[in-house]
Length: 180
Image 1 (spheres, rainbow, N blue to C red):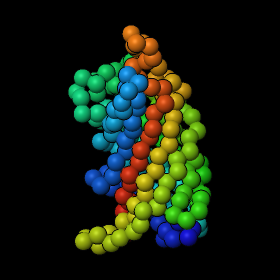
Image 2: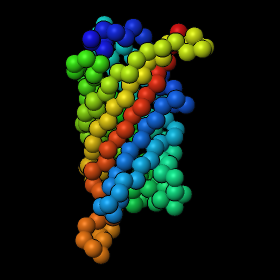
Image 3: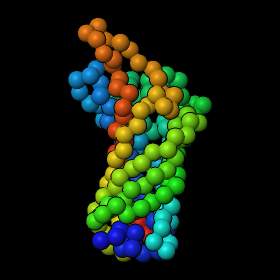
Image 4: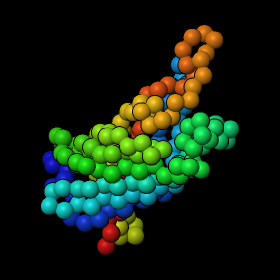
């Protein structure tokens, strides 16, 4: 099945209250720390079997369930949210990739550094919610090297290795609502 041919033409807004934009990173080389951004907007515009996707994230909304860690991530050591308040993504290509799969290529901007990334999404289905909204679900992930975006802070461990991994997994669980 072609996902793009399944979707009706129109504009689809991300329903942030039923979605998650998150990440995971290896910490101290032994475990993963997971987090998310709690304030973001985004939409997809679908027409003629093609799509454009745009997302804007408030970098200060980072949430790793640790106020101290969140404060450090908001600081100039990492996101420097005072100088660079937004993280953005804009697609350059959206293509079907087999049954229920999409490959989304686009430009991710963090701290005014823009790099191309690819996100593989699974189309998880559609439903009409109790309020009559047409909902469409997608789950996807991608991996980036945080140093490519100027997120270079780290600390060496006494036992060897580093405190924070360079590779970060981006995680997306998206529920969209089609505009009426």
